[in-house]
Figure 1 (cartoon, rainbow, N blue to C red):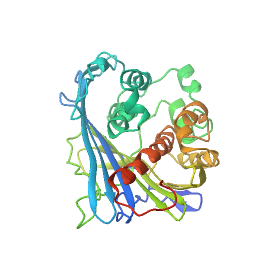
Figure 2 (figure 1 turned 135 degrees about the horizontal axis):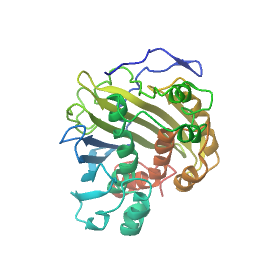
Figure 3 (figure 1 turned 135 degrees about the vertical axis):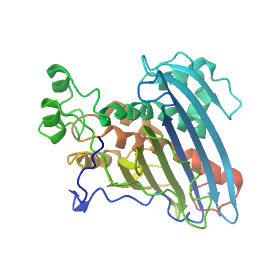
Figure 4 (figure 1 turned 90 degrees about the vertical axis):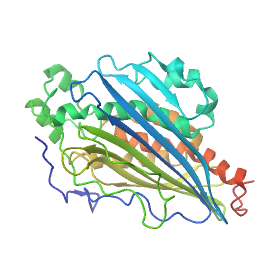
Length: 342
């Protein structure tokens, strides 16, 4: 049975479980990247496969608005073993080399080997492929929500202590796990993503059947007066029998200098499953002084432990896309000279 946890919890002086505005008005002189990965169980909860459908779109807003890129991705993944059974994209690239690969942590290494240029250029297709392991992992929460797959050995449970802010050793999730009650707490209804009167605010997102998940993102990049402003959003949504509910949600705003080095960053926790999860926002400050091109590798290597969050890490790593998005503005010639883009 699905149960929603209490709303209005406090984190860093702010109420959490208050949904973040997913698609604000597009700033003039910006490029917006939106992406989504939907995970559906076409054969039901105990079926042999999950189907994953993704879309990523870049929109440049200048003197004129233009869709710079729009790509789709479809995968079939085996539940047992977690291996890719089929994959195709609207991009005219041969992705057959990913068939048979695990959709877990080594998937990104396989993508890097097969598609090094897509990875280096931080393309829309790379953004979707990079999100496959995380979306596949989160989709497994369907078993916990249904009351299945909640028993763990004591050794396994203790091995997760301080893995992240949610699994902090003396936190609620660890206490529940030790008591054999590791059900996932759901958040409030997830707001519709979009903006009235602006079809380009976010690409179209269709309703999903029960037991499905969606991971979606937005990032706005805007050069202003010799620096670059970045505003981002991340949300995981579970589709149950009733309204879709948020599970993980963060917003972030960063300022980069002309060399694309992080000078400031602020993370806003939205809906999160456990009281301790918002403690992970302090880890974002570790990026100050780092060039965005090094963030992906840095986060994967060093962002571990009780002051971090896997889902926030995935949100922060998208800052590595900033240079590619700035290139969109240069290529289209849609923005005025900012002193940053040359």
